Length: 495
Ligand SMILES: [Zn+2]
Image 1: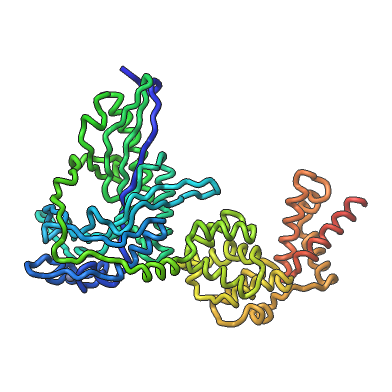
Image 2: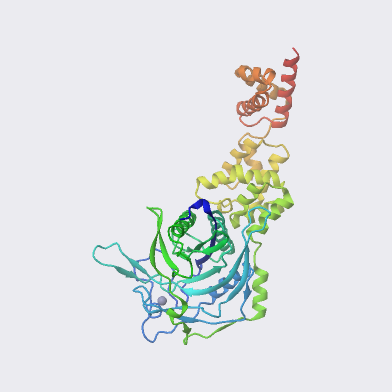
């Protein structure tokens, strides 16, 4: 009997991701896509699957899908077609789903999920459009109810190669995929509302006595949080290794692949069913819809419309302005925020001061309000204006926080707010010296540390500077204050 110390193993993960597209209406009818509407109120003969009703493709859904395919570096098919995938389920009234089987709209892409400069490319096998099913509702005792509001909602399914080898990479991949689709505006990416569902295909390559064995693949269905993606993969990794150790016959050729569900309360995956193969679904071409032919001129236009994507944008901010990776990542994480940052730079201000204010000032106010910096409603000119006030020494960084707060409450310029709030920095040496006196008198221990305790000197001097800023109500000029404190400490050291 082998034990864990006799083997080496590597995790292998590929993904199927369902992304709900941000269209106003469903994929093949005019019903509204709306979360939380009264059950079965957003339905019509087409999405109810009534005999004789005919589907009409939603052009916008196709365009959003192509845009995503381009962003994933896919080849966009000149011609793609629709197929019926047959299965019976109470929330699928037609008894088939319209999807794209052998001619998907996008193929052979690549998505780089690197967070530093080492590339980590994930190959994209394909992306295709399909319609969502309805929902079985189990909250009434003794029966299951069916709500068909979701039936026919457009979903883009993205399928990757098994290029991922840790739960951490899988987590990063899912986070960045959500960032990408929200950046493109193709999906709202709301996980709580099930607008992105992740299905990792997981197995393990186990090497024992020089021979490699592969465990059967399990597909964990419908994960709708990043945390559950990570936990489910970690769990499956351990389970598959243990199952193989208990029974070396647990390998891909002897066992069917499995669909499993994630039980969040117990922290385990649960067997659902053996996995179907394609022939079980009786795919055949959808007779009620024409294949989609792509106009090359339109495709060229669409390519040109692709915005700068998050990864490239983050790299640009780091390279052009020497921002820290963390600051750049924060600014880029939301598209309107990144747009505001670029617009403020164009309006004229120092990028580093601006980045500091985005991270230390604006992001805090935004968080408190459940918003993003880019959705606070402050225009680029005023944002740049505040950064300039700090840069040219008109106000201190701490005064800028108060002014920023004022900017959120009014439409006044930061300059006039600084005046009105009495926050314009005082460059008067005598006045500043008085504040320094007061700070020294009130903080004797810090003064002693700054003069004679080398371990604490730097921190103590910083503390005294902070006290001067506090006493002055943020009006002391930081540079002048620092110089006066340093001179005073040097004097004391000699006496
Ligand atoms: Zn409908």
